Image (cartoon, one colour):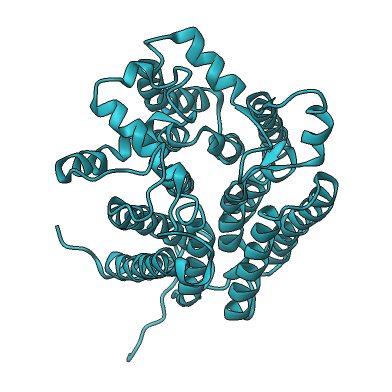
Length: 432
């Protein structure tokens, strides 16, 4: 099968960005010991916790995936996607730094290359989405680079490829729905939710806005549920009640190395060492559902533009910045990465916009990693998140006020339609 020029150019740009990420990640990971007080390479413990889950699947333990004591509470499709790398690690007899650290685990170098593939697919999804926005295609390298840089923060240093995979699939679902391919969009949305259920913050308002008619919405929901159920139910088979409790509770403590307590956590955790974050995430999903229903009712007789839809869904995705009781910096990456798609292509100076939004995004991520008190932390993080959210919505409002989209081709001049002379009309004779 031969790629059309558009697909070749997209693949080339995605490959350049993925190789740039891999080179930068290797340089930072291997060179950190020169400038930082660390012994050995800089790598992600979370990535190897997910690798441990992939090994558990290889050992036949998929049915106890969510059981207490196995490790973190991940999502099965993320670990399943790492099974080839886990099998490669077994064949090469690599020793992995989980649960005990190692200074220079060789498998980490392969892991970074493996994660670069996720970023490659994500950039393809960004480019596919951007084409639906009706903005200048010449600006797509700046949009893709800024969005990929913010999304790559999930990969390095945090080691969460499942989040990037979910983001890519959510954008592919967006493109499919804009194209009217609701069946394909349903399966893509289901796969995104199976990788990371919190992509439902983006997907629920998207589906409620784009899928018109109760019958079509019901069919879409049933199709979208197939992949998450097919993956999750076998993973809970070993101990269903304990697995369900682990999923809903998801206890976290602010005393972990990278968890940052917000003011909300400080108020609720006054007499406890841990807090159940799962119920806050259920609350976020209910808010996203309510927003989607409200917009569906308000816009039921209105054709909604792609930019408006993407901006609204990105805004709902930012709920994690405000409602998570304990923050980890990569929680903010999805809304910042999607915001780059909405903002940069619409600005008159896309280079300046790309640099500005990327700097703002990494500045917000730096605040999310700070060790301030819960009060100071929240008073810094929440206004920054609100500013980013307002910027996205204001820019889209400005976009929609334009008379024509940037790349709207001018309609070719058409000759006037031929009209037959009415019956009984006399034609003039030419030449005698």
